[in-house]
Length: 601
Image 1 (tube, rainbow, N blue to C red):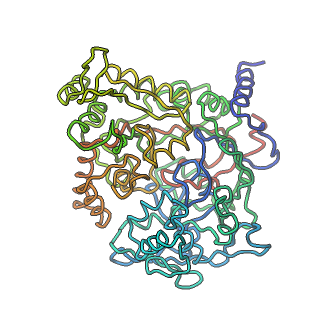
Image 2: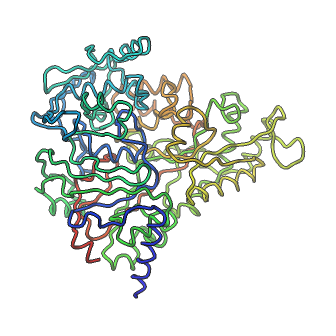
């Protein structure tokens, strides 16, 4: 047996043992795309999800009126279920959307054997669900910021009566006719149109489906998109199959002229009917090693190279020669995202706005070495952050500098000493200014990579004389606890869903407390500036407001922003058309797999 054959054989054993999944090949003959998540999904009801992994599934089943061109850079919006781009009023308060006639939902028992056409009423109903208290939608805070006229009144009525009145027409969201709906905002919002490309916000589900499945909606995504959910083994394995009802849609991406690889993809696939694959198999493989070995064995068609294998697989940002000989290619971008450690501002230990509490969070930030994390754990695959705004979105300022990523242990110790966090009993650990025991508590997941992050945190907090403990749970449970304000500290990430900084400022906006404001931060001046920047066009006035938002963010430190990650996607030669889009999640329809190439590997 060759060394390659030995490694691949070992990979099969390791991956199967780690995941307990059926061996790939169960769908021989079909064009099947295989991909692995590194964290568990939560479910597939667009109104109830906020995590990236669930969104990947939902975005390929349930459709929004708009979508992003798959290859255009900078990002470009195009119609999806809409017949054309929306009509937008000059004051950015009214958006009129006309959808295509003749689009049908996938077959489902909820429709009692009838073909069910998509209508404007479905989009109105689906977005109203975000305001219905029954669903506890994590999207309510962010959509509520947009002030759709009359919808908050509907929500308040439901809170008082216990029932949301879906039949009541409101000015802010209504169907004008069977194929036209209109959105009216109380205030201008120049960038609101990007919400129309988010299937969680404006994706269409049918009322019959919701009424049939009720509280089990997370397991029953029924949409008009190119795929249907065929199998779900929670936190383990998902299968999507081609939707036989999907309308004719042809590949027509428009890449920039200077992007040679994207031009080659567009030329190769232009005119092909979508989707090109018959089946998508999604595994959840939390641990990096079995996920990487699964890719090497050809059981995954592409993978974001785990941090532990960056130097081995893509040294200096190029595919290693041993992988290049197998035809493996690299797609590398700086993801428009942030990695943060949240500090719960309501927590009695780490939260609060008094000078000593601010000093504690700032000392923790100054005493943690981001460069060490990047060098030793991330293998130089992250840029240190100066603010919560990542490169690639409107609002990023490459000239902005702050203490966010500064490492200064001496300054951190001085802050702690000055504000009374000292060791009073001589045991080597600092106490609170009132003399009570001080212990930091970090929520985390169970992977080996999490343990490496924990080691860095432990080392640097110990050097400051701060105790830190780690509480292990699954990602969905940590997210649930974060929304409820039950975590003291937790390291997580946010990815942009639109090319604008608003997403990242929203994580500290007071009315968003719980989600996406996991930190539960509240500051009147921050909130005022946040609302201001939403209503004004891009330009100097908005830039000035965003500068002040960044300054307040760094001053109070509701989050320690670590950095912005590189994504190093490597893919086998039998996978065609793959590019990571910075904002879109509905890419399954844009790729193709050559079964003969895979089986001949």
